[in-house]
Image (cartoon, rainbow, N blue to C red; front, side):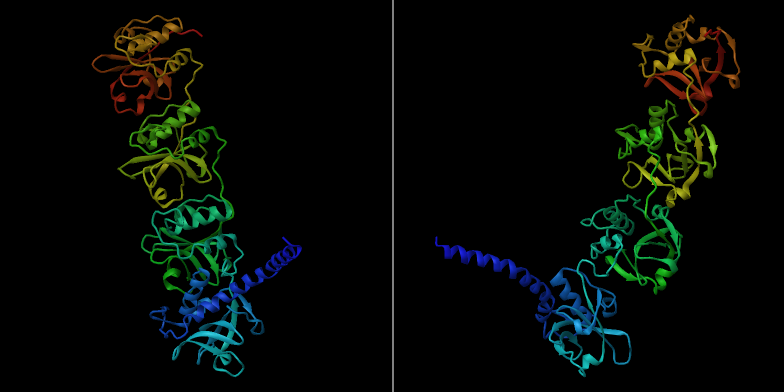
Length: 537
């Protein structure tokens, strides 16, 4: 190839780099006005938003910006006037919005799109969509109020990262259960999603719990990005959350319109339901360093299963029982109403991490649900509602506030393993039941007790009825760990008292286990007697 060819090729590429960006910029700037010109001649229609029906002035602007820029604008000129940056009349550019007042009012009543050369495109009541002059003395020049330049990525000129994120989802559908823009949102989950995307803060997914966060803000001190809360006027429960946009407006997920911006300040409906506002900049975490909470967190997301007792599925008390046993070696009974009978009652203001929190009349009468207090007004529990899994909830959630029954502290229910008989018994936990069994391969009830005491140098008779003759009798209220406890059913059943109302005993279904006989509907009624042996060391 000739050197001239290479020279021309170089120059051609050079000029493309110089002029192509400017050409692209010009096309972008012209796209709004060029799109608007496609609808010249379309008739006027009050509140019209479609070319096949007709356009109002705001409807034309709304439709054109949706087509040209892919952004949703409000319908009415007065709302569109709240968008974008102010532009001086002498600095107008193609695509700017130009606003006009009515004949007998100073308020904004109509809007047009600047087309360049002192020309606007506007939907006229008498002529439909037309081009009109903006020169001095013309009809529109005399009613001119101002102009705005819109940034498609920040229509409302907001600085708050929460609002910048929230504005991205205008027009997203409402969904009562959705968690993503594709699924749709309810109001609380919309707020939750925006906080996570914008600030990487994980907040609750319901309005009542969200109210637990942040700093209380009065209406007079609202700032863009603050969270607004609204209640059900009949029940007083918090039902709706929204972001404050500024100038009396909010953005939220409406059950009829999806994500939308509305004026709430002048609305009697919203004002009558206003509950309060919060400024949320951080979310206080649970106490993850506590060994009990650290253990509980291992099972986050485990499914709720009625009567479940393992990580493959928990019910509420099965979860608390499992976690306390794994983390602290504390053996709780298996039902919430039984756990309620244990430990020390605690006032709300004295609650500590690890305390058991109880609720009543949830899905059945009486004490019916329990969770573990995890710090900062939160509990971790196996929830049967919603996602039906092990999860964290705030105690201020409406449901839990209404159903709250009380608090119990059970950390002190530690089994004293320094007692020789108790230590030996604990070491044999989960050994299976075996009819006639007297060794760690399998035990029956008396075979287990006989074996334990043999390990510490005491020989007992083979069966419970004969063990009753050993040692000295002890009153129930004087029981100490290591004492023999007897229950009378079709035969005499021996067990080893391990403290705090608990016994080590053999169950046909679970083998050697710890159970609290004092709160058990089976063991408590058949309590028979107790004996204390002369144990050295």
